[in-house]
Image (cartoon, rainbow over all chains, first blue to last red; front, side, top):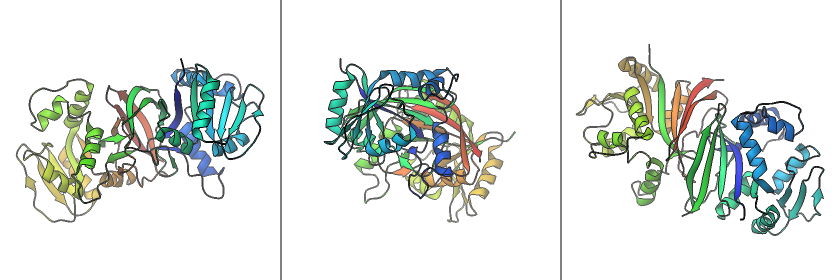
Amino acid sequence: MAGKVFFSVSMSLDGYIAPEAGGDEPGGKGWMEQWMELQQWIFPQRFFRENLKLGEGGEEGRDNDLLRETFERTGVSVMGKRMFDFGAQAWPEEAPFHTPVYVVTHEKRDPWERPGGTTFHFVNDGIESALDQARAAAGDRDVRIAGGGTTILEYVNAGLVDEFTIALSPVVFGSGIRLFEGVDATRVALEQIRSEPTSRVTHLTYAVRRR
Amino acid sequence: MAGKVFFSVSMSLDGYIAPEAGGDEPGGKGWMEQWMELQQWIFPQRFFRENLKLGEGGEEGRDNDLLRETFERTGVSVMGKRMFDFGAQAWPEEAPFHTPVYVVTHEKRDPWERPGGTTFHFVNDGIESALDQARAAAGDRDVRIAGGGTTILEYVNAGLVDEFTIALSPVVFGSGIRLFEGVDATRVALEQIRSEPTSRVTHLTYAVRRR
């Protein structure tokens, strides 16, 4: 049986998945502070620390279980060019995917193999082709649309996402990159599948239906 | 002990509490359809039907309990002029508040008493004055900032809201009136107090803290 296509992000209560990228100092203090607040439920988790080789220990509650489950279900990730460019500077040499990753880009480039099982493949003919290749490589595991926001929304509006999870963080941004900016509300209907609060966030899962 | 100041709204997953108001036909089909989707968890509830005199019967689960609890904790409501003008046409003669209601407006007008215990008072000297009067009238019950979105956010940004609840509906709008448009993110911090899913929505409760 083929796997599902999903995405999984942390979102502020006012709908943002990242702070405003603009300005002359993208790694500056305001940006990083907001980003850390949004993601702060992740950093103490044992799985996150293990996977990024940040050391032993960490929390092992439901937040940790859900991070691990998301990782384990993912046979392949798909991402946009901007996320790749940003991540290529941010990830450790042993990139945290440990699977094939398909990057949707205009850049022609040979596959880039990293230690630990992550290989980046560069796809030049659009999101559907990238997804086809990702599905084939994922086998019976799921395909994660990893980001960024623009790429996720392209897949949503194209009707190619089966379900998604949002870790809704108790924070407001006021500005930034909105997950659903430009969503085709005339075609996208949602069904609430699960909703599970932890002490830090609420984990929401929705199935995407076509209207 | 004085009560709390709170608001309680239904919000789409992309952060909207009402469809776009503009256009020549505010009560037209698109507007009303979106509104109904956002609020559809409310309509089958027994308390809603009773309070608006729509007839006997209705559901009696957690959604209903939460509607009733929100009503019962509310000693006084505060609202903006636009919400009042809209509601004055929409509510039945026996308006659904059954308490004093303070309307923030530039219009000078005598109190307007309705059957069933609702009296509208028109306050001309700003949101803080309206809240002071509302607190005095509410006694030990809570003050609800009823709406609309602009009025709610004025109170939030002024640091006058203690907590709020959101019924997060499984729907995306793509456009409309955003709850947190213009929120002062440098001053507003949130704490997730409760998060409770039902089959229809997720009921979220946050305390508002000052940074």
